[in-house]
Image 1 (cartoon, rainbow, N blue to C red):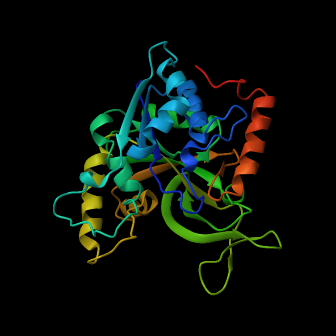
Image 2: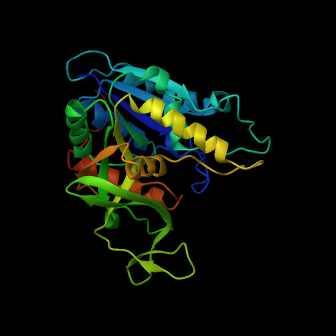
Length: 307
C-alpha cells in the first residue's frame, strides 16, 4: 500500500540558533531527518514529502537528495520525493498578514501546504526529532487498516524519554483510555529539575509531572480526508487573530485536541518504547551525535544511509 511520510522542516530553529533541520549530526554528517527517511522507507512508506523553507531546499537536496533519488521501496520501485514550500502565499486572501510578522503560522499550516501532493494515508513528523525504528513500522501497519473518515493515530512516548537536560521543552500531555486519546494539553516549560524530577515550570510554582505520562512528539498518522477539516480549522484560527498578531501559531496537538473534544476525531495511541531525542538547543547536539554513533556501532544503521 502507498503511504507518505510528511516531514516538517520549515521551522525557524530560534532556540537552536540555526537550521537544525540540515545540521549533520550522524557519524557521516547525516541530519536527523535522514534517519527518519531511512526508517520510514524500510517500514514500507513509498513517498517522502519535505516541507521546507525555499532558502534551505538546496541544502536539503545536497544533504540527502542524491541517495534519496536512488532509493527503492520494499517492492523495488523508486521512492517518490516531493518538496513543498511553507510560505505566506498559501495564506487565504481574507487574512491580511501583519508586515512585521516573520514567524511561520505553525504545524497545521505546514501540513496544509502539502495537501495538493498527498492523496494517500500519511505520517507527519518533525525534521529535528529522532523517533526510533519500530514506530515507523507500527504507524505504517496502522495506516493500512485505518478508517478513511474521522480516524487518526499518534505515537505516544513516555515523558521521561523525551526531556532535555539543556532547557525547557513543550510536550503534548495526553490522557488516554484503552489506547484511545481522550485529551491532549500542549504544555510549555517542561524541565528536569536539579533533583531529577520532571516538572511544568511555566507558572509561578513548579508542578511535578509523572515521568510515565504519555506525551505527543508530533508523530501523527492521518488519512487525506483530514485536509478539509484541517483547512477549516486553520481558517477559523486566522479569523480569531487580533490585528497585528505576529507570533500565534496553529498547532497540530491543539487542533487534534479540539477535534477529539468535539467527537470529530478518534485517535489511536501507538505506544513508542524508544527513547526520543532531538535538537531543541545547541547543547543537545553533542548528545544526539553520541547516541547516533552508538546506533551505527550496534548495527541498527549501516555505515552509510543508503537504500
